[in-house]
Length: 291
Image 1 (cartoon, rainbow, N blue to C red):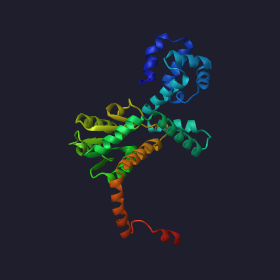
Image 2: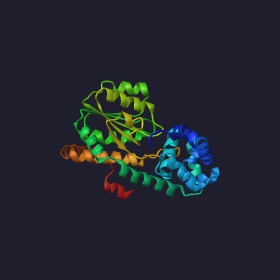
Image 3: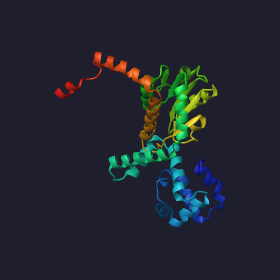
Image 4: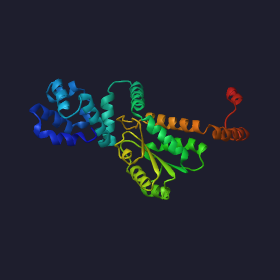
């Protein structure tokens, strides 16, 4: 279900039983807590049975409680302020080991991304990048490192790559003015979604440019304004946005494009290796061994 569960609860409220109204009221008032409760815990909190909570989810149109919980968590990601994210993360963490918890969460996001990422969309994105005259990469705020990382490697492969990662909306439009149907725009956006990235993607698409959105959902603000959507899961509820899965997609794009341009890249890097060696860009192995 792609709409806000709070709107759904408001719509269905007249049909609820007394117990269902208690569940609905708690979710509406304490959604940041309810989103991470098991059906059993939610039931105990509001004074109903676990089976009542499960039936409530089904009556709302979900195929079970896990689906309703996922909808609540997606809503939370788009509504929580940074302070609320810290509070929720601390409540979820409790006495658990931080390193293990974060690693498990990141591994789960990688697994989910592998399942939902369309290989057809991915291949279409690679083909569009390869034939583009110019490549623009949009990534602001926490996604700026993704944009810069992708731009770093694409600059070895193409002559006309533009990374736009640290500008406000006005400055962004000044950088992308003139984008046309010969160009590709790769944009990154995850909750809480940057409005400037969405506006930039919408403008570029209106000019005929091909927009490749790397985001967490096809119906996200960026996904809705992209020609190709590469879905990457990044829904860690904390102050820090998890960029592990999006970075893996970036890595896959770089590897796939490099494979298509193997001959040109071999020549480029052969010349670069000569320059790097001549100007001591990298420490020599024997120097490392002496240190």
